[in-house]
Amino acid sequence: MLLDVAPQSSAARRGRDKRSAAPITGARRRERSRLGQGPVPGVHVPVLARELVDALEVRPGQTAVDCTFGGGGHARMVADKLGPTGTLVAIDRDPAAERCFEALAEQAPCSVRFIRRSYLEALEQLAAEGARVDLVYFDLGMSSMQLDEGGRGFSYSHDECLDMRMDPTQELSALGIINSFDQQGLATLMREFGEERHAGAIARAIVRQRARAPIQTTLDLVATINSAIPAPARFASGHPAKRVFQALRIAVNDELGQLDGALPAAWNLLRPGGVLAAIAFHSLEDRRVKRFMTDRARGCICPPELPVCACGRTPEAVLRSRRAIVASAPELASNPRSASARLRAARKLAVSAAEPAS
Ligand SMILES: C[S@@+](CC[C@H](N)C(=O)[O-])C[C@H]1O[C@@H](n2cnc3c(N)ncnc32)[C@H](O)[C@@H]1O
Image (tube, rainbow, N blue to C red):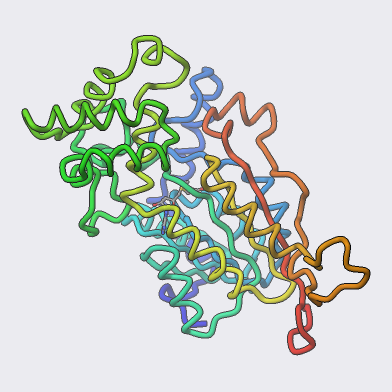
């Protein structure tokens, strides 16, 4: 496989690692944890990290694809297990992730490569190159860096331009959606991607507000949402803008369309015996991952009244666990973001004599 980053010995890379922020980050994180303050803002603490590495069963010499590199927390752990004969392909559409990758590339013991594209495009690119890989994994959603980095517009806690693009070169932003979608389109988006109960009232308030002046910042939008929902909902558990912000982020980044296309693309790249894993943070994603994996793990689909199988279908996958894997109590205590995380994984079986499992 061609590498964008030339492989270097790990000793050579470590010798040049004076600029790496990793040790400082670790110390700061431990200090915050000692003080009971939780994760440092802007530092992405990987969720279900040990569980992901266990589910993948990473072995030396394998080729792994991290579809959502972010700060590289999961990738670092996977790279360590791949060792000098392994290869890690990292994908992310955010240029901030590419900067994090440069730090990892200095230290990783394995060959590394970064593709800055959407994971759907990157997986298609790998397929076109004829790549076959052993492990593919996703850690869906946004990173803490995206949430906390000034100016990205993902957070309802800072006053920023309504942006929410993971890839800053793409045209569609949250500002465009909020100020151009009609009332019906806004309501549907908030209902479908945010499961927002007050979608109709919020859409009406947005249209009314923007007739007076464009809604430009995150806090303009928060104020409009607050004006539309009944007082008890404003003080119910969770931030009142949480679901609308989730819906906008999903729409801006086409997160569900990407996932629907990427799951089969990732599956096709896997060699028999390879593992696909995904960590989802809300039911819209988790349902898709679960359905994709259980469909592949299902054998005969004949009606039960048929005495013998007529469909001839055999399972393509074995689920690594029957239920989704969730965060342990210590992880929940130290990282609240892990509360909604669901990890699922499936191993690909050899489906034809032409492709025996390795
Ligand atoms: C939850 S973070 C991953 C964090 C990472 N596992 C870590 O340990 O640091 C998700 C990352 O996936 C990226 N991402 C989300 N959807 C993407 C897509 N469709 N294509 C490429 N990257 C995507 C985001 O830009 C973000 O950096």
